[in-house]
Image 1 (tube, rainbow, N blue to C red):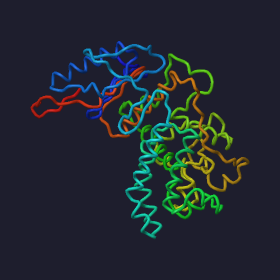
Image 2: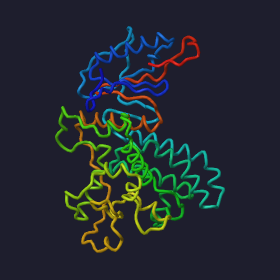
Image 3: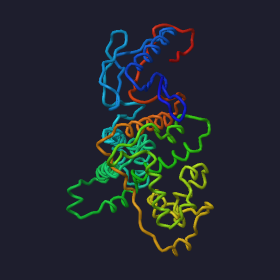
Image 4: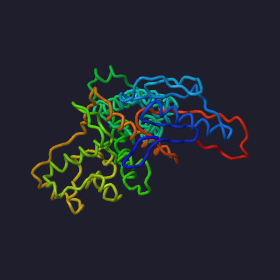
Length: 379
């Protein structure tokens, strides 16, 4: 049972009492959940079926699902380890949750922020309280341009309140958002999210212990084709596109190009790929993650010096325009969902493993119904 990922079967994920099962069919899911329920009963645990739900993608037929006569509810999205996951790989609902979390975090420091005149202290409080709430689990995001803009809009709205300004007064006074950023001294949320993703990607590519996090990052379903039209954005598209455009701009021949996954396996060289050269430390933050600021690596992985870069004929500025997701989401969206769940599971410091392919079930609460001689039950 489960889904075959490069020759290995992926069928379950465990984090404390949160369990995820992914199977290729409803019938297989019923058998798997029944076996899991039996295993729980043997050690004195019972599933909370009222909190157990399942999701399915377009490849699974619409069929009822039940366990011991109890119908399992179907849902279109589910919050797993603090991040909302859906089969459409749509980040918009999660960004709505991040917006509420960011405002809640700001309210917790609002009194201190408004009373202090220390700009550095105010920025530090924002960066350590609001920013982590706004960009939680951003390591697993497949950011599109519209998602990046949404994150920036949320941050700017909180920034204006922190500075005692409204959008109307800003427009009437003709104050640019960049001017407000110079006053607030806070970090850019979109850049922070990309930095987190870059750091996490390097960590994943350096894993050599056969974890599912690395396996699903390298996985490409071989038995299906991507749908026609513009496909959904994948987690790795950010790196693939950024490196391709930089290689093209620097006119590096295809034989001399090094894949980003190879560069990521060496920590120092991976950092050099994204760190602008010749900039003071206080300026690196705003320019990190901008491919046009990076002096690309040659085939021998040695950074080009500034003088060499200035002599290059093409220095076009590059952006981070992500491919927008097509309406047809089917297999591609699902495989991306699998990858993001695995990444998010690893980000949450889980010691468990993941599951598989067409419908998955979350069993968020396992109730203890008897003492088990001081030992913990495992499903």
